[in-house]
Every structure is written in C-alpha cells, then in structure tokens.
Image (cartoon, rainbow, N blue to C red):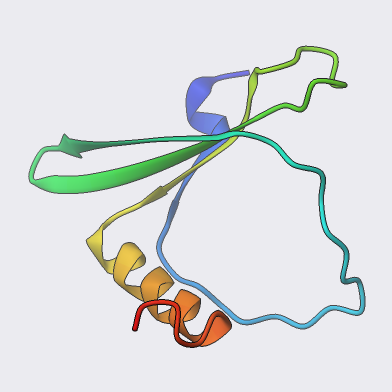
Length: 85
C-alpha cells in the first residue's frame, strides 16, 4: 500500500452520534512534528497490536496543521472539562 493512502490531513472535525460505545484495545501512538514548506504538521501514527499479523506496523496515520490542532484542543476541553485549567 502506498504511504500516502494511509495518511489523512484532518481539515475539519464533525460531531457524530453512535449507539456503539466501547473501549478499543490499547496500542502505541507515535508522534512527530515537521514542516512542509511554511506549514507545521503534527503526525500521529498508531501501531498494530501484538496479536495482529504484522505487530508494530503502522496501522493508521493522521496529520494536523495548526488550525486542526486548535480545533482538536477545543474538542478535548469540551470532552474533558477542567483538564487544561
């Protein structure tokens, strides 16, 4: 699979509802930040759990620019009141 097909630069967040509410199994999330031109990017990579066919392989990657990071901070403050106070 091509590297670019596993990544997504998040440009907008949208609240959604779901009847399914369950906790997923724990995995490791690696992160790094870098610049592409004049744009700063935060990339989060989740790695497959130990029971997957290829353990520790990057499973998904998401990227945030400054606007996406700002919006995610607002969402985190709503989801976890008092966390940043």
